[in-house]
Length: 102
Picture 1 (cartoon, rainbow, N blue to C red):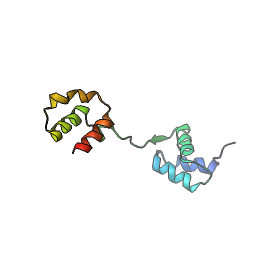
Picture 2: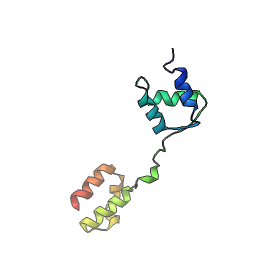
Picture 3: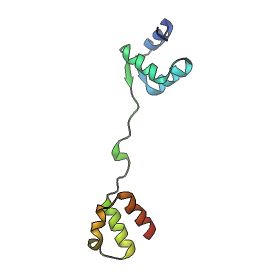
Picture 4: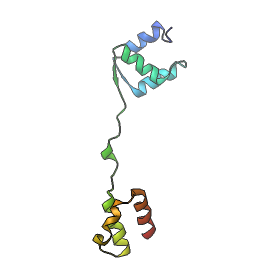
């Protein structure tokens, strides 16, 4: 048995394109539905669903371990080549060391 009445399905079809926020609002208006359920129903009814944009990896700044080693070298006043082997260490450990010597 479906949780969706004929009037609910008609309300879904009244709009051709649905976004995540619109599905969430529809679910909030109908207390027995979840957002995920509404999204599934929209898709199964052949309506267009536009998902939330996923964050891109380039949105966050990636710091290389070699850059952290260079920061450590500058902080302790040695040539980066003298400690370049540190780049093989765990990144969290390197960041903790860089913070400690800063």
